[in-house]
Image (tube, rainbow, N blue to C red; front, top):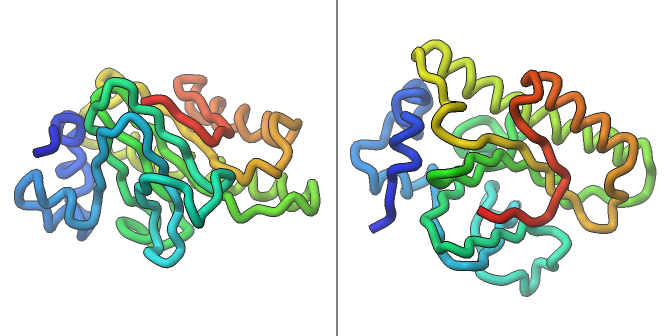
Length: 200
């Protein structure tokens, strides 16, 4: 049985009680029906599976390609939840794709792995869009916490991440501008990264 402490400590059921999927949760195991997946393997991958219309855990990248996934390193084998956000909790395209959650980290993730390296302008647009989608879900969460009188930032480390195809240029001026925008929006409390790998 997974350890649901991370979800319960953040009071996600009460914070998102108005959302249909959370309102259907009667017991901890119901979190795994549609809202979350859980893994504790030392190495796993997250892929934004268009056929499922949400992000999902996969055990390898065969048939997908390693440049389109988020590599999750879990050296301590802790239960780490993949929170299905885009296309499950909210209308597709309005918030970031998913989040990784355990007792120490909450990382919101937006996949832009289909972005092609064909123009700087298009890449820049996608960088900004990825940042905006992560900013939107985090702003929503913090607003719900404020209404409930709950300071989530004392419970866990929060950050944002955008996953791009590795052929797209990295650490350029447009990406740096997106990072600055995100961090300024939250008074430099949270980091935003363009990466294809995370250690949880």
